[in-house]
Image (cartoon, rainbow, N blue to C red; front, side, top):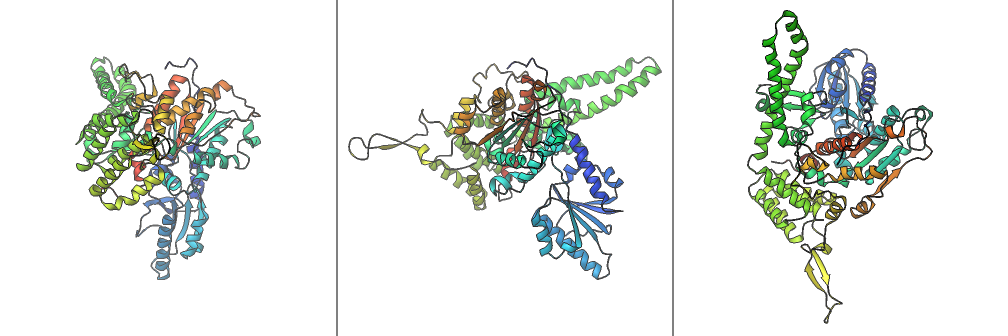
Length: 625
């Protein structure tokens, strides 16, 4: 894939979203005058750090910060602000605490509590109903904080709503669809009208329809406030996670993806323990493009990271050695003022990233052969060696390896083969339940409902040949799984889109030429390939047969009447890809690479950043051992 001769435009300044959110938060804090305590929902600690630090909160009257928990006794101010997601569980916890405070006030143990509940990203009517049922509706004031997309990096935006996947795809709740549509509305108000719109999946189409009906800002209904703006984003892709379940279930092998799988990255922040930092206290590090070393290694295949870090360590040491060549006091001052600070920062980053790489190597090879695991996954993707794959899964069950990782392989096998043949399915399910317990039965039901793990349909398991029933032409049922003529819908789509590269022997992971390098050259993420193919002609023309094969609903809109002040060749090369249900760092890396070689700049928005384990954890009904 040759690099594009066209120069990619600059990315829009997505950090404007942070400034907007910070201003709204300050306004809400100031609505309660004087000192107050702030109680945060458990999933809002890290996202709030990306918007406002402790210093800003103190400047606007926040005395102490607490995490919302059951049976907590808060000893603080007489004024309190709760900032939580609008769930019935959170509201019930708050109502219990308010009732406790009312009882204490009646007994003269404390002053009457002034309480305000701020729901984010929006307030729901059901919250008021619960407060009313609990008898505290008149004792609290409610408001909402429209915390939509949070800038994680210059090209990554996240709603930080991991619950979206379960709520929409499993529970079929539409409560977060408005939040996604509203976040798109906010993007359009900041960066101008978006001319080209593509939706892949039922949820994406639902969001598009909701977005279009929003007052004054929907497609075809642009208000005067944005029609005169220069468009900074040319295309928006809304993609349901259900469009591509295969990609997140594959083991990640890029450096950033492995950091997320091994350590867990939350809102762009990673926490390293003693095994990495050598310190007693955990070390927190923000992973952004502003860290020069991280920017160099984040998108690399893991096998190329050590060599880079080794070379960089030698450079830093050479930088330190320059101090021995300084001949004057002025030279020493310049060295301390200009070079020493950068060298120390690079040295700190190098030590952490080298330590993290060593931990990744030890954990990924502990008890298993990681290369064998990857080979089994790639066989599943190619649709070969099914028996070997089943034997490998059975071995993991017998040796009681991590149950979520084993379940991930079962789902990957099912997705790539349109289900598992009945005999093998029953055997594998029984072995899993014997190994992990029958309380996993409901989880299997959830996976079946989502289409992640299912028994293969009869028409795939057996193939009828011959004439009518009876006589010489009697039909005969024969197994068709191994038939050369039968292919799963994934295999058909994979061949059509060329997701599995043919020439892997000459692949150089140091200088990749194809998006498949994010999986070691074995597989190109389906979601990213669809984006590439649609952008080629700004239509679904090349991918319609694939979408029909995979039963993916789609929608596109390109208003012909739009008038834009910007150069079309410029704004059309900025693309927002919005994943509904989460995306992986492998997909983010693949889109960055696609932008580099095609002359595009991609902004990746998502409801949350996921891994295969976190995806499955959302739908399991059992706490893994």
